[in-house]
Image 1 (cartoon, rainbow, N blue to C red):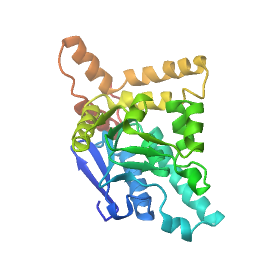
Image 2: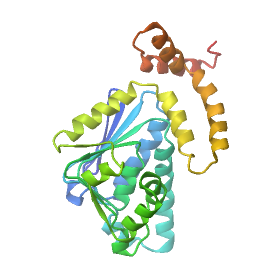
Image 3: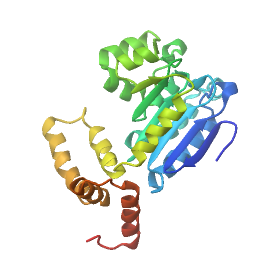
Image 4: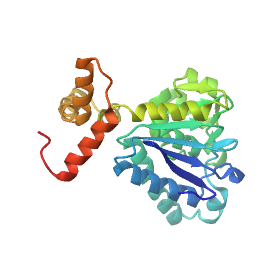
Length: 275
């Protein structure tokens, strides 16, 4: 799927989502939001998609809210409906049972920054900047920012950054652990996509279970988290991916996790017992 706002292509087992509306600095236009929401929803249930890579083109990853939409549709009901639809795909990104790699190629502003933080592993170009931007408009943070940011950098640092309309360079984001790596601008795409392929070649089922449980780690007690582990690990042990990985480790061989997932998919669709 491609239009002048978003380009979506499969690259092996990685779904590549690229924002292409350079003229608007990849602002969150209705077309871009709809395309992204549809891609995220379909990827969640497509067994051929084992990882996602999301990035932008031009000088911005995503400049946040589309000013044309904000100008025309800022009444309470329109705003509520717009954010209700948005929250559905952001929550799906956060809970996606597959790894999501983000390549921040330039400015990530406001909701665009929140969108980036909904991924699992973030790489930034040397020229990238993370900008709060919300208070400049008299708006509160959105696109999951108030959920993700305190978990990544701590509550006090998150409040100071948001309240002061702060800007973090890529180097500052790396120092705080917000990003996994900072790369030269002309190397970001290749390195981040390569990492997405490496994750796609791994035990995606176990990653999905891990995401599901780790996503609740700040909301539960230690005892509850251990209970989740006691429920999740038996599920992981029953997957073809575990049989493949454990067997390969035992035999000192290389695991083929995508092939294991294909076997899992076949068994599920046959409706039979894997044993």
